[in-house]
Image 1 (cartoon, rainbow, N blue to C red):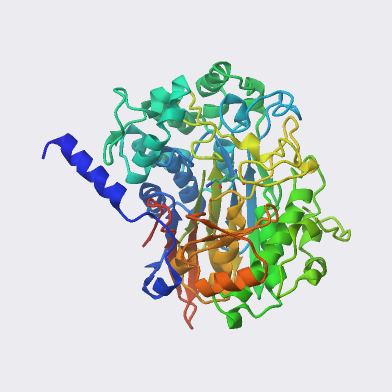
Image 2: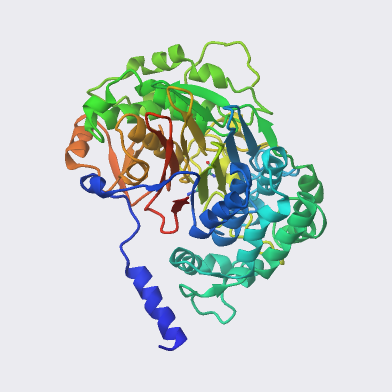
Length: 571
Ligand code: DON
């Protein structure tokens, strides 16, 4: 068959393949996780999972593998994996100690509070939407602190992929779908549309020589290969092609921050989470605490009782998020107090099992003072042979972020500035209404919904590594993945595949994916929920660790069927 015809046939095959969606409850029994004895990676792309396993087999630990995965995703999943965005990493070492890395973007030094209202700039598309990228600083800092292999080894898989990869169906479809947006920006058009104007074909070889050069500079010079020298010059030159604000000083001044892990408990399990400026840890832990007194397992998986309760728990958690959450380096966030069992119980005092509580009647709570304590996205979970675990979520925000690719460097810049309360009181891209604490200020980190989490079992052993993309829907996705495993006894694949629901205080409705049982929808309607059907949201990547009577581990990997490229593999 001539090459072009073969490509077209392949493209039609992929386009006509069943859309990637949730698996209905009725089919849950057929879902099996990937099982392995030693190590497991669940990531957003098969080549990224392969990179993780390659590094583990070379003697790297879970952090080496996670860093290799992060760089590989920047190459093979350019809609979300990135060098030009930011994220969060939670690490649990084999001895049970844990830490987190915050590499969220910061507002450029030239940013100001009203830049998206009076200034008339766009927080969603174009150069002014980009915050100062954090991913490279974060991956390098985590590797320096915890890694075992040389940086040169850890970057090698990504560099090889940048020299040429075969476009997955998902990438070809996304590149083609965003073609018009890419053409708005000269550099993006050059790097991400075909030179002769035709559509990308599935399986076509896609080479990223400029990106390979950036990765080589990072391989040679560490963070300076990105934040100084040629890469920094290219970013600043790109800013000048639009209304961008990122300067050399912003890049040189960017720092990833190691922050103490935020902890909570759920039914005897310990949660190790990311604290602010991520909101996901606090909101997840609040929602889990809120449902803990209730017999979810007896009510049944996706029963109206259980979904109603979870919706009410999420309503209160998101109302707190909107008011309290902010960059902790700019605003005092009472993280521990928001998780206190008595405070969460007080928030749930108004819970009515028979009726919704209108969001208009629920505002943020006021937790009692507690003594201060040391205080389009892709997620990947990695566990190594020694029991070290890493949960990382990185993002550009929307698919391909600001849609601006850095000319001569070939990576997208984020549009994370939209995660600030750009116009406090008005909904952002994710429909979130946020408050003053999250207003734009120079050098400040915008609040995130990202929720990378590691759980320990009742005996303090590593139990689960989880996270997801999905904007505000990340929090409800991770909540459901955790309860699916702990309350409903599902395996790792069932936990990520079943239909989900979502509620975020405002707007005052519940979203659900097709496949949620009819009786559940009726029961929710009777309780007063306004329901909106969404095709799909979230793409969770999890690893669950099981132990037999002698303590021998089996690793279960779950990769969300909603994204074609999601992939779990181990050995
Ligand atoms: O940090 C946040 O909350 C968002 N920027 C995450 C965006 C996201 O998950 C996109 N994925 N579909």
